[in-house]
Length: 119
Image 1 (cartoon, rainbow, N blue to C red):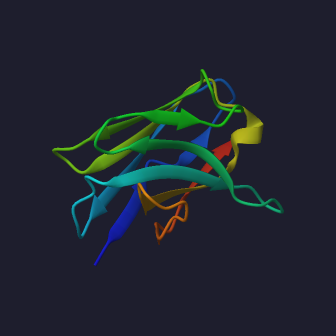
Image 2: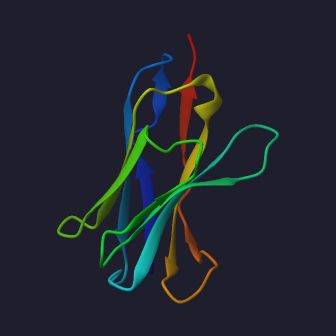
């Protein structure tokens, strides 16, 4: 059974940094893409970043480019999202998700972790 568990959320001030982690288990993810999404109150869920497990190739939403970095640790089966220069508009529930490289739909989702950026 595939499990994705997020951790690392919290309350920070604008300009601070936070590191989220997604622990993946239940299968081999060598042919998977792991993504981070977020959903703010009253808004639709949006893509933040993703990484191809086998190659390490990463993609980012324009809104986080240059501030967020996604990375994977194959030995630990974790995917981290380093978030720097946080802004109040980054406040959201952050979700980790996984999809097979040859499909566009994310099949597996974590329960999310809250990130609040406020002074």
